[in-house]
Structure formats: structure tokens, C-alpha cells
Length: 316
Image (tube, rainbow, N blue to C red):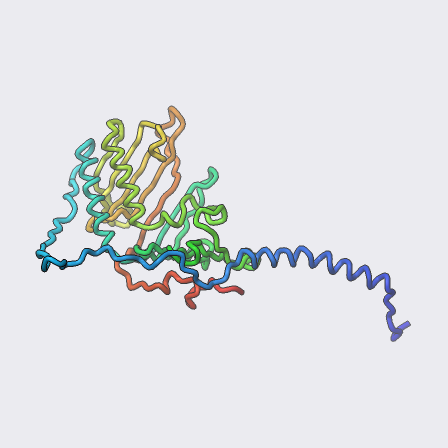
């Protein structure tokens, strides 16, 4: 009858409570897991402050003699293609010179682009805003495309030397923030290299190590030349091909582009080892590019702090 009160029996009430509890259990578990993965932002230094290695200019015997350091710059890059041992020697000298100059830089910013083959599938190019501090080593990334807004930061000696990251969208709601070691599977899920390997100095050091191997390998091919890209920008280029698959080289074919003025390697393309008889079918394994490089950018510790109010590492 209209207007009559609806009476709910005790058994119905009991069933409703049961279903409410059943539905709440997975939600509570998911929330608990997300907060467990979301470490607090309080900073815990695990390393002592960096120690200066600068030698004193005076000692107990009197003032140190003055010295003039003359830097003649990197060796001249050939105007015509150069290969063989002369190319290997010149390139190694160039990279060693670049390494010395990079060591004198405090930090820099760049637009970083990467394309990587993960689990056999070549992914789409990713574009990130990048900040790097050389010493103590620190890196900050902000994804521009795709997954715009995702942020990652690592600062040596801080936050227990963990990578701190947050995603976007639904995944961010489920796990607001991650704090894991750089080699943790979650940190490595979408990349071929640990964040501790990021940056120009790390890239240059790797190139130096492989070029030293090339000098000892008569079958390693090295060609130096010059190219102009589709935008009309000139580049210095080195092309490398390795014929000895002995495990010392991770890639069969490598191309590196260097800035004409600074000789800094800004683009590298690495190609996987092909199947026997298919050496002409190169498969890209990874490509990394540094655009809009600004050396000695005015960076501070706040640029590598997830508590930076300009960043979005805070909890929802």
C-alpha cells in the first residue's frame, strides 16, 4: 500500500553487511598496497657530503709554483671520410678530450628523446625534459610525450639512493608514487638502462671504453665522416661495425652523431646483431638523442628534490 513503511528483515540486513565486507576487502587491500609502495618524501641522506679533490695551491714549504694550462681543443675532424686505425685513434682522442670538458661542467638541461626495443618490440619515441647534475650525480625527467606529466628523479646520496617516480591517470590513482632501487624490476619495466647510466658523461665514458676495444680489434670497422640532417644541421659522424660476436660488444652496428663545435655525442643509434646471412637487415635496438642542450644551466638541489613544489610527486 502507498505510504506504508518498508520493513527490512534481519536476514536481509545480515546479507547486505556480508556483501559490503566482501566488496571492501579488495579495495582496502589495493589501497594498502599503494600506500606501501608510496614512500614518504622525507629525505634521508645515505652518503656524506662530497669531498673536494682540489689540491691546495700552497704547502708548508712555501707557495706552489704557478702553472698555465693550455687547452688546444679536440683534434681536427677530417673533411673527407676516414677509416681504419687513423679513424679509431682520432676518435678516441676526441672522446677523451670531450670527457675532460664534460667533467668541468656542473650540470645541464636538455630535451631527451629515446626509442627502445623492449621484449622484442620497438616502442614509440618518448620525449622527456631532462636535468642533470654531474656531482653528486642526479637526474630529473619529466615525460612530455607520451604519458605527459610522468616524473622520475634520482639523486645520489638522497632518499636511500632510490628512484622516485609517479605515473599519470588511473595507474597514479592505484599507486601514487614509487620509491625503489634503480635496478628494481619496477624501475626497469619500461627502459633498457638504469637511470644511473643516464647523461652525456655516462654515454661518453661508454663510447671511450668501446673505442679502446676497437683499437685492439683489426676486424672492427670505424668510419668518420660528416653529414647534414633533414633540417639542414651539419653533424660529425662515426659509424662502427663489429664482426666478432664475442660478447664484448652488445651491438653489431652503431652510428653516433657529434656536435660540430663541441664534439659532444648528442645522438646514438644502436642496432642488434643480425641473423647469419642477413647482415644487411639492420634492426634498431635503441636510439637516444639530446636536443636543446644547455650546458652549465643554473640548477640547484631543489631541481632534484621530489618535494619541489613545482613537481607533482606529492600524494593525492
